[in-house]
Amino acid sequence: MLHHSASASVKPEEQVLDEERRQCKDIVSFGPFRLVATERLLEKDGVPLSLGSRALDLLIALVERATEVVSKRELMARAWPNLVVDEGSLRFHIASLRKVLGDRQPGVRYVANVAGRGYCFVAPIRRSAAQPPLAERFVGDQAANLPTRLWQGRRTALPRHQTLGATLDWSHDLLSEFERVVLRRLAVFVGTFSLEAARSVAAETPVEHGQVAEVVSSLVAKSLVATEIGPTSVRCRLLDTTRAYALDRLIRSGEAAAVALRHATYYRELFERTDSTASRLSKPKGAAVHREHVSNVRAALEWSFSAEGDLEVGTALAAASAPLFLEMSLLSESHLPSLGVAHCHRCRAVGWEALE
Image 1 (tube, rainbow, N blue to C red):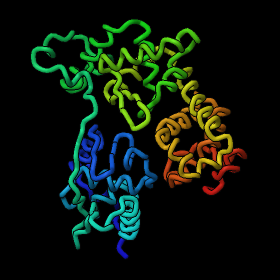
Image 2: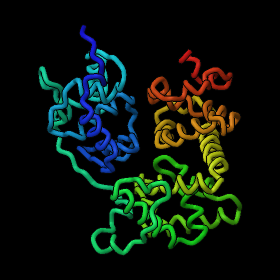
Image 3: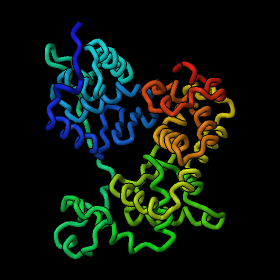
Image 4: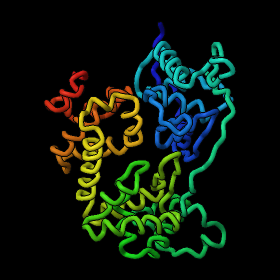
C-alpha cells in the first residue's frame, strides 16, 4: 500500500487557506448536529458527542468545503500534519465519523465517497456566527474616530489588525478598574466557561467573588464577553481577538501565574467534586458533563507541568481527568503524555499507564 507524506505535497497557499478556515468563528448546523470548530465541539440535539480528534479534524475540513470534493491528500494533511500515513488510516477515521453521524441510515447521508477523488460533505448546512468581535462593528466613520494609539506590540501589524487593537484599547479605556481586572483574568479560559468558573478564577478575595457576576454581565452588555445559551445552561467565552488582547494585559499585570493557579485548581476541584471516583467518568452521563471542559483542562495541565506551574495541582488534575480523555479517545492524541504525568502513581491508577 502506498504511503503519502501528508504535508509535504500540500502547497503553501493551500496551507494558508486552511489556516484561515481554521480561524472561522461560524457555528455550523446540519440535521440535529451543531459543530463549533473553534471549540472542537460536536453536539447532537444539544448533547456533546464523543468523536476522536482525527475524525473531528476530518469533519471540520469537510464541512468547511461543504458540497466540494476534498481530496484524500488534503484530508490526510489536515488530520495528520507532518506525518506519513496511508489511505487505510483515512478510511478508518471516515468510517468512525460516519458511525457517529449515523450516516447511511435510512434517509441520512452526510459524507459521500467520490471514487478516485476523495470525499464530499453533501448535507445542507446552516451557519450562524457567534457575536462578532467588538472591533469588527466599527467601520467607516466610526473607525476613523478611534484613538490613534495602537495595541502595544502591534505597531508592525497589518492595518486591519492595528485598527482592531486601537478599537480594543478604546473599549478597554471605557471600563471601570475592576471590569478591566476581571476581563484580563477571564483570558485564562480556553473556550467556554460557566459563571461559577468565572467567580472562582477571576475573584481574588471574597468581596470580589460577590462582584464578578455583575461585572461579567456588564462585559456581555459591552460585547467583550459572548454568551452561548444551551438547553439547560448558559456559557460565556471571550472571542479570539478579545482574548488575545486581554491575555496580553494579564501577562503584563504580573498576576498571570496566580490566575493560572486558580484556573487549574478550579478544574481539579470540579472533577474531584463531581466524580469522587474517577472511573465514573467513563460512564456516558459522567463523560458528557465534562466534555465541554476538555480545552480548559488541557490548558491547565500545560501550565501546571510548566516551569512556572504547580506540579501537585497538575498531578491531581491529571489523575481526575485521565478517564475522560480515555473515554473520548483523545488521550494518546493529546499533548498530555509529553508532560510526564504518565509516570506518577496517581495517574497510572486511572489509566495513564496505557501509554507506556
